[in-house]
Length: 370
Image 1 (cartoon, rainbow, N blue to C red):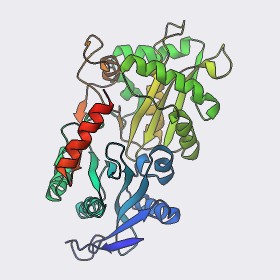
Image 2 (cartoon, rainbow, N blue to C red; image 1 turned 135 degrees about the vertical axis):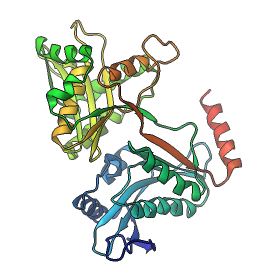
Image 3 (tube, helix red, strand yellow; image 1 turned 30 degrees about the vertical axis):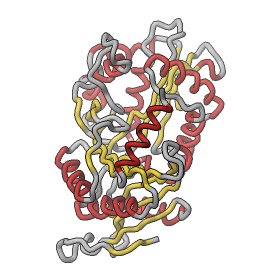
């Protein structure tokens, strides 16, 4: 389970005085679970993307947990990484570590980020390694970036995921949180009670096909990509981790079966914050009701009750509904009705051992996508 010892300068007697790097494959489920439990017991926040079953259901490849462990058995920092083949260059592999959100002390964070670099260095025919950092504090991301730069990584100019997001502070009372919303958002939230609809959890894969249809309809409007298997996997994950993953649906009261589902939204609890992970809705309803506002508010209430301090709206663009160049502008308008606090929370760092092969792979991808 443990790969090598890492010497870290720390005050004598502190838990981080002799941290070790544990590299745990997903096949060692008990050891992985032990690390997660030890980290949460010490006060750490585990991201949904670091759960082995979630990774195995949603991402193809070999999965590993990198954890900084102390002599007393506590876990001080962790992050999952996936190594998978790439179609752009047959025989080559890529490494992806998502949502590194820090640890309990800087020494532990350095151990885990250094471990990701070491894991990448050990991979034969590695096309690239990419690490996504996420934290509201600029100084923490800056420190992590410096360590990755020292290991040969460069900051990615075209990240795979969002960099900016709308943030809602969940620490005040619910009434005070809602008071901070735009009047339009408050009106749409209250309107739910005036229509023949209800908001309820989605926990049955019988709704998967309807969710697929809603996703197709929504992403045709926004230009997003679509995975036909995603709703089934998402529902299964929510059933397995009800305390970490929440899917809420807006249902008609006057219709039975899956067709009653007009919209849904899913939230992921990543410890101290929750993410607005995915959402979809129909425009084929005769109800004069904005479908997404009540769902977003109920996800915030769920996250607050679970102990989250802030809500991450899952990315935001600078455009508006009137911006023809930004197909996500209308969605960004929706998010700004909940919060004008738009922050940079994420950045991605990339390592390409062979720049020539990386450029060739980029060329191949561009040809395939034409």
